[in-house]
Image (cartoon, rainbow over all chains, first blue to last red; front, side):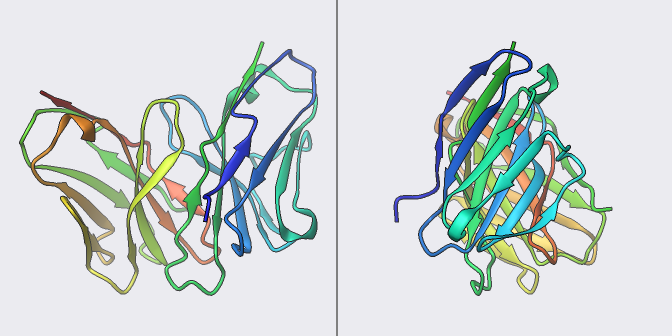
Amino acid sequence: DTGVSQDPRHKITKRGQNVTFRCDPISEHNRLYWYRQTLGQGPEFLTYFQNEAQLEKSRLLSDRFSAERPKGSFSTLEIQRTEQGDSAMYLCASSRLGDRSYEQYFGPGTRLTVT
Amino acid sequence: KQEVTQIPAALSVPEGENLVLNCSFTDSAIYNLQWFRQDPGKGLTSLLLIQSSQREQTSGRLNASLDKSSGRSTLYIAASQPGDSATYLCAVGGATNKLIFGTGTLLAVQP
């Protein structure tokens, strides 16, 4: 069990560029979540997957955002035409369906800065 | 709509003091409540999880309680140490288990 990993850890991009983040969940965890955290705030839910199916999306996830989880393993979060308001920490978490506690384990996050 | 509030927003205590962090939520229909620690610029570390059927959980110097009917949880830290300095986040999980977070309590333990 190596924990949840995220790549890259930091990303600086210019406004209007596209960026893609990757999350590798704990093996055998079939639920995967994306959250966004801005400075001084708690994380906010963006979307979650159960295996490869995307089951819920927040209203925060505008049409510039897309998330995938092919084959129910790793997940990617893409932001198209980035805006300065997209600057935030993007956090990924995983949990195991069937685990009664539903405990979520978080990765180290990807810090996005849009200039 | 579930809302989570944490009080105080910031707290500074001398080393060795016992302290209590508070979390309140508006909708008592929760599946669980998790307390996390976050160091500056880092991800979240899970400290304690309380299932909706439980009243409290303990881990080392940490004790978390849950009163679902009143929409409250507390995190008790005994004999605080400078290494406990961090932001502490409370989050509640509902039917889909997405977590709704509070804004956190920034704790500083002075040596």
